[in-house]
Image (cartoon, rainbow, N blue to C red; front, side):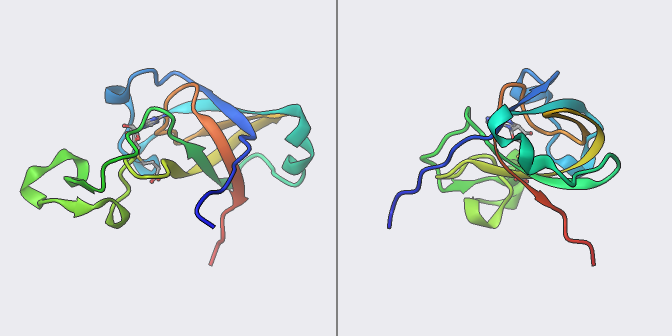
Length: 132
Ligand SMILES: C[S@@+](CC[C@H](N)C(=O)[O-])C[C@H]1O[C@@H](n2cnc3c(N)ncnc32)[C@H](O)[C@@H]1O
């Protein structure tokens, strides 16, 4: 199988509107926003509570998909790395994984913090964070 179909479950609303304004990753971000989950998927939110950290998968819709080597964080002194050895947004399937804190829940919307993702980015999935 060389192709798979993904149904987006929602969309992010936030105040990051330019790539240059986005934090490099969630662990260095305090930016807040709202995950709007489409009503047909709302039942899947049952059990998520304010205060917990969730793992959110986004589809980076403005990313290049035809580049396989990058300079990590644009730092040429580090040399070229294969994209699968990095957290670069550039990759054949531009899926991002961000660990976000749930600040509040209103019906089908989760207010979250820790965003490194642009306003309007499609949401592919949400998972519980494994705690050890
Ligand atoms: C380095 S990626 C990390 C994403 C995720 N936390 C991960 O580790 O998979 C974060 C960067 O992706 C870029 N980005 C965010 N939203 C995007 C979008 N919708 N399309 C393309 N690039 C995006 C921004 O430049 C941001 O700094």
